[in-house]
Length: 77
Image (cartoon, rainbow, N blue to C red; front, side, top):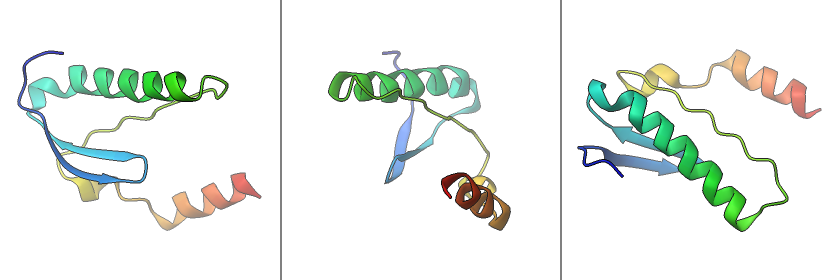
């Protein structure tokens, strides 16, 4: 792993919220996705794993909207 100044500020369910400098966003998103998928494959290899990584200047810019919720429900039904 690269020496960096990444800081975990919140964990909830399957989300990890980090505080990082802009210069690390590309490397961080790559490592986070690889790590999450790798751990899923290690413990549950029969499952096809996927990981979505997003970045924003503020965490609340990525909050789900009502449309996101409705689209999720439509997929599940």
